[in-house]
Length: 56
Image (cartoon, rainbow, N blue to C red; front, top):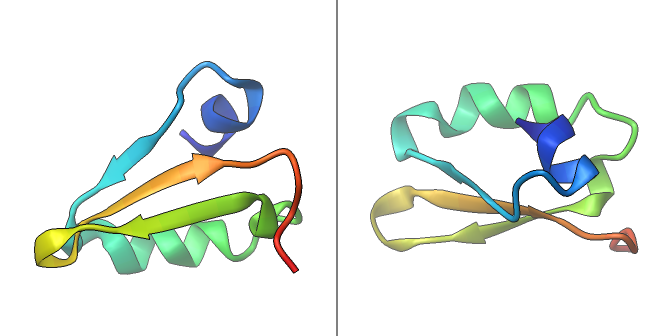
C-alpha cells in the first residue's frame, strides 16, 4: 500500500487501530519514511498520505 501511495495510485491509506503498530513497524523501516504523513482519527485509527516533500 505504501508503494501505491508513493506512485500516486492511492491518495490515502486508512489503518484501523488494531493494525496500527504492525503497519508502523513496516513504515519506519522505509528509506522514504519521512514522506508519509499520518493523520490521527477518532478511536485510534490513522490515515496515511504521501507527500513529495519530506518532513524535517
